[in-house]
Amino acid sequence: MELSIQSNYARLARLATNALFFLSGVSFSSWASRIPDVKEKLALGDAALGSVLFAMPIGSLSALPVAGIVINYYGSRRITVLAAIIYLFSMPFLGLANSPWQLAIALFAFGFGGDLLNISMNVQAVNVEKIIKKTIMSSFHAVFSVGFMIGAALGGVIASQQISTFAHLTTVGILDIVVALLVYQFLIVQDHKSDEAQPLFAMPDKSLMLLGIICFCGMLCEGAMADWSVLYYKQVLNNPKGYATAGFTAFSITMVIGRIIGDKTVAFWGLRKTLLFNCILVVIGMSLALVLPLPWLIIVGFGITGLGLSTIVPLIYSEAGHSKTMSAGVALAAISTVGILGFMIGPVMIGYIAEFTSLKIALATLVALGGLGALLSTKIK
Image 1 (tube, rainbow, N blue to C red):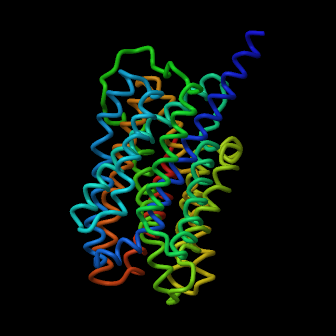
Image 2 (image 1 turned 135 degrees about the vertical axis):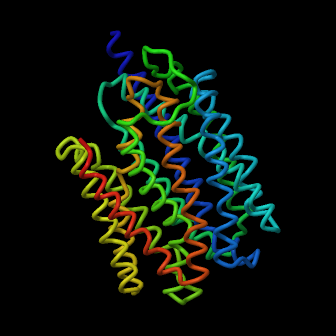
């Protein structure tokens, strides 16, 4: 009877955590799908847009030390609701902003709430893994990608119907808080902690630093794809009536596929071979999309890139979350400190390179990052 109760408890907790991952994906890609509309509304150049987008990862980075402290003190369960409240108040202002500085403030709050949700829901995922004694982190991130894909596809349709960015993002923000309150009772109350007392915030130790650098490369690529892939495809498409999110949607679909099969892939190949293969796919996919800029080939290239990036972050998050020297919340916040730098550097770097050269040349940096990730993957023991 006790085993049955524990199994049911784990099942409900897993469903509740999946709901958080799904909403996080929908929220982020909903914003990403409206970036071209906001860029046009505010008449921003590529460099100016890159500078404004920089506010979001700054908000995320600002949340990291806070996340480690508040999750340890209040628990990840409560912080998920706090993050949803921040989403509720920040998302409408992404559509209402009438100047770059207003948009930057809204993006800072959106990034801050997003990283609180990111760390807290990943701690919940680690909690579930501990209960069922099985590695399933990739499956949680697959659900994130499903939400990401649906948000991207719906965002393209909504934008094509001339529905305002404000109405679109406000609806998503309301959905976030409603679902967070509904699943709250099913989340795990007690977070996994190590047996040893540790500081509330720390950088990754040497054994995780290598993975953190690979995470940096992966997160920079993911951020660049989210912020710039729609604009790149729209430039090549050169058709205002076409769906500029087609390449972004292909990227999101293959992210889902890769994460669905990710847990089995790692079990069969191991961590090093899986990360190496993923990074090689990023190189191949982005090379196809940039060397031969045909609409259908860009879709294929973005799809391959999505497959390559699919399990990089889940693998590293799972490894950090099961650290024996840090609690899950502190370990995830620490490894995210390294990875989130990719999101910080990526948007502004791509924007400024595009301003002085072209967006195609700017996105070629993703090929180099994929190659760096592949090289570093061979050094993992």
